[in-house]
Length: 628
Image (cartoon, rainbow, N blue to C red; front, side):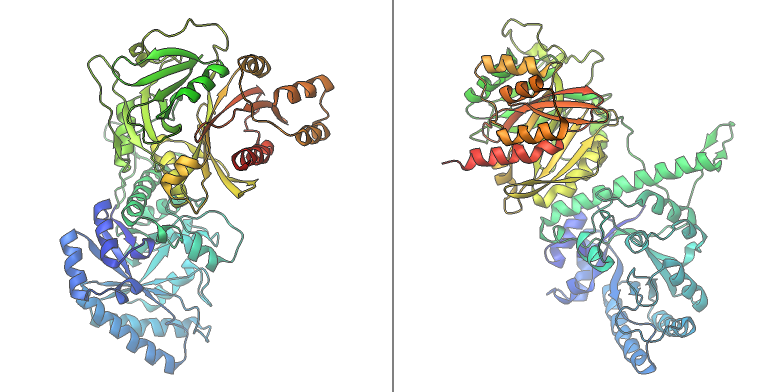
């Protein structure tokens, strides 16, 4: 699949955008007209830069408001078009995007539109240019891709085809199946963009809230599957208008964009394979077995991996670890000892493992630095992540020490892919010396979920990263009220809930480093008996997050709890939630640095996170942070 991206997706100058696209590995680019107009480089210089960078110049865009106009305006539009065709010759470009008219169309007549597009196509042919006509979702008279293609057929000129844009099609809920009936030779260009499902006017939605594939909710694999079945072989190019992307680091955004196309290519191949089986369109191979039907556009796939089986460990890094050690001990974690060659400690409670890392700690106070996940094959999982442009994280090891496959997440959290064990043990723990004598208490404890703060520039990037590299599925996002404003919360989890990762959007005014140091994150541990755990922790001097009495009055009104049970919750600062499937008990510790811990107990089939209690936690933490 030939990959492309529109320069409008990125921040920076045209030169910076082109360099970033080349570094990310794109085959070609679309030049957005404003980027060229504002560039100090001549068209000839831009052409040479592209050649030097190995980038194709695939599309010049956009040419607006051409069709459905009066004869006088048509004359002016053709003059304007010829100037652009001359410019494209200097650039060495041969395809231009022409949008259906939004502002100047006054005549709703397909015969007139076709005749005007025919004149444009004839003029384009004189300059060796092909015109890709696109139906804008908000076009005045033409807003449907099938309507646009009918006009192309009416004109029947070799220099006029159509452009299929996933946003303009999927935002209007147009059926994508008819794409397969379009003559592939008349599909001159394909643009893709994802988006969250929003209730707003489609123009504002398009101009501000598009995202890269895998970061929204559109059925892009299905869209691309129909495009492939139609026989299209040209570029698949990203056209994403997004306020955040236009403010973010150029190279990083380009890499995220490339990751999204790699992911989309794989998902489209999967869709084609699954629908071929459903419809019985697989072809018989020579040996009698079924094989996938081949299409003119070949879609590459990635190494296949299963979703993680669970958390292997969580790591907190700090200069001064005394408070952290005290807190884990009060919760009931047992010290397993120090690593034999590294300045690292291991603390465990059942199968929940926490590493305290004092090596070259860059934070003066504790902060979550790494997460380990149990996977079937760490090497294959790492190879997949690297093909998805994930940076590699290497750690020094000595003989007879576990070699972790590591990658870096968008928020700089290090992700380690570990060899899972059926009994939940971890082979690397033998590298630690003897610690305290173990008790049998809470031997079934596990890491339930981890909550990570995400810098505002990279929230969507993080969603795609964990979806594509770790096979976690994004759940519907929520917005939680707090004294600092609404906190956007995105749950990423495996199908069985063995891995639950919660991504919270950090305040926009903070930089990435500031967010990681000051925005609170936490690790939650699941135990069998939370009340007993809380009583033991209290006896060991644990400082609980103090829950206001008003919360318990409201809780009683909502659930009509037994008085003794309610009294226990109040006594131990426990929070409670209940749904049709079960109950949820949890408590929080005070914060150390930017980290706090949560202990939870899931009863029945409760599958949530105590969401109604989140505003209470945010308010109490805010009060503690700002208390004089």
